[in-house]
Length: 283
Image 1 (cartoon, rainbow, N blue to C red):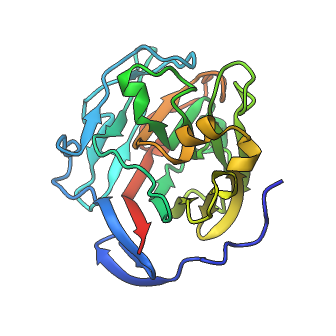
Image 2: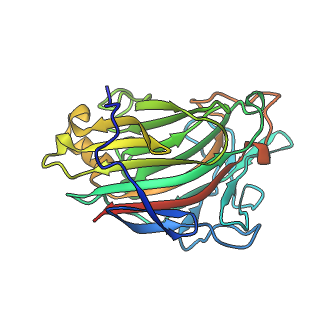
């Protein structure tokens, strides 16, 4: 069971570093993406890999493209990822940060984004699967999933106002993270409007078993996993001590949400919009 108490180092907003990215007392912004740019343009490819693929390992239906019909800058310092249905085929977008970070020993690391969702009705979002998450960089160098480690900061499915935070690790099926389910928790989402989603990776304890990853929605804790719960130092390293990168995408269909149906709509009403992504480190 995770602790229901807010962490003692709960964050207080002290400033705005640049538009959309808050500053927090006791933390420095290490990396940020504000999604500035002309309306209709794609993300800065100096910062992001734009994935083009239809090889989806979760039995998803979408093809990821680089088209600005599937992802674009809004012109108002946000990113919009929009699934589209054309002639019976789904397309969408997935971007992965070129930036890679390692949570530092003796420090707390925050990864955070501000996100909203389109206003299609729940009945029109069957199969829609937005996500803000991280993978261990070792997967880019030959380590298989889930051994590479995965931290899902936010997932929602089927338009339901429930946010999921999950870790995947070790081996599948089974293993330390109970694959293919993972170890996770949920929180209610008040509405489809703007909310802040965060994980804090705390490496300040003197031993790996007391280190933790904690999930927050709008500053309220809803999930925590410790090294002791994983109970394997090498597996814990894959989640909290080794290089990671950030992913934003909207999938369609797949093992988690199930498939879309005849009422499922693409377009703006099923989008995920992101105001910023930032990584912080305690000072």
